[in-house]
Length: 422
Image 1 (tube, rainbow, N blue to C red):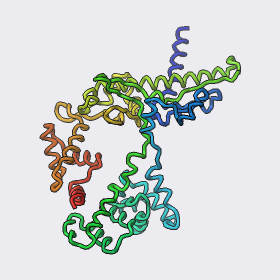
Image 2 (image 1 turned 90 degrees about the horizontal axis):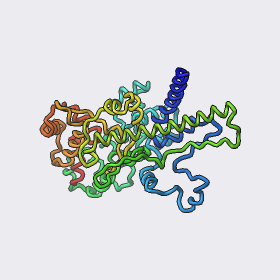
Image 3 (image 1 turned 180 degrees about the horizontal axis):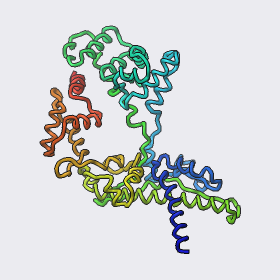
Image 4 (image 1 turned 135 degrees about the vertical axis):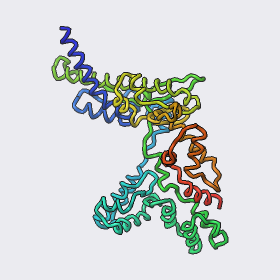
């Protein structure tokens, strides 16, 4: 009997775990969709969204589209639904601009290689070879992106993006020609100060989007945090985004519970509820552990080195399980909204006490305060990093961190600063 009981318990646990993993892996925005998929074979289960109005609260809808409380107010402020950059571009690949199937095929391939900033920053010859087309044909199609929205998208760099955007303006000839000359000789803007149309040309150039897809950078993802960390008089409190969690409603509709089919569906429903609770429990433990490790950050300091393995060990789960648990999930605190993954940083230096996040923040600050007439090269920034933290890094590491922060190179920054000064 004891052996049979242990086997039954293990089977029940493994069944719950099988349901727990996809529920754990889903971000809170797609959690209802995940549960809906799991419940589609169960006619007695209905998954109700956390923000959904039930019959008991239907009257409140006259006053508000959603039930209002402190948490849902936060969610509404963060949850924006906007067409993505790529959706917008795909919709524009139509005749007569892209008349043939070949031109449309090339255009779609170009879109797939446009980065989040809106630039087509790949090796054109290698790209053409990969899609089996001539470089000339690829360039002919790419140049048509000058007519697409957002203006400047598909350009290979900042200056070509400016040329694309200039095309959008109906300007007098002298202003248009002056603007072209300024963009083509961007490092020497001061040469054109006495040229007719200069001031109007500068006013136009200042209106350009840089980077061209800047309007989409913060709207592509619907950010709904799973975890809230609140600072109450110096005390940190962790809570889950319970109000956004869907619930599992089970209704037999008067059908006898003794039928084997019904018993099986009741068991499946209970397993879903258990898995949902396990998800909450795991994420709460993750939130508490992050606050414990990163207390200084939540009090205004820097993120400390923290390994995913440390968290997995503390929680008694496998590394891959915790990796699934934090993928695509966010934490909200009074310093902003952060990807949970951002709290796991590599320790650098001999003592391993300096995090790569700390160095990235330092690089941003150095560039923010640099002399705009002489922007710092990556080598100069490297020297400052090594002096500040007493560690040895490679220049490529500094370049990588700068690019991850979407900060232009020193030569590109110089051009942008000159534009601001003109």
